Length: 46
Image (cartoon, rainbow, N blue to C red; front, side, top):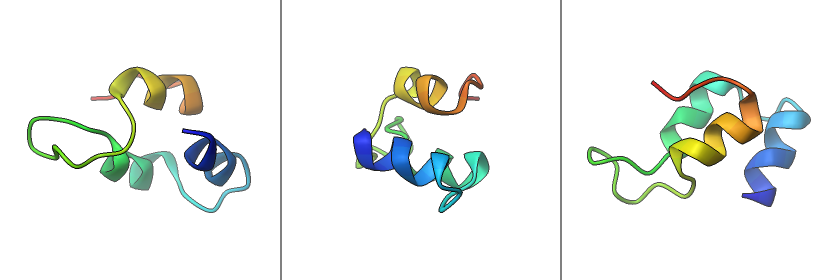
């Protein structure tokens, strides 16, 4: 998660693009959980 947190803070990735890194049923190979997404972005994962 440290990488994704840093990438978001430095604007290397937007909140919308970061959704692609979230592990879900449709994306079982994601790297972060929906809870970590919220922790990084401050926005609930939908």
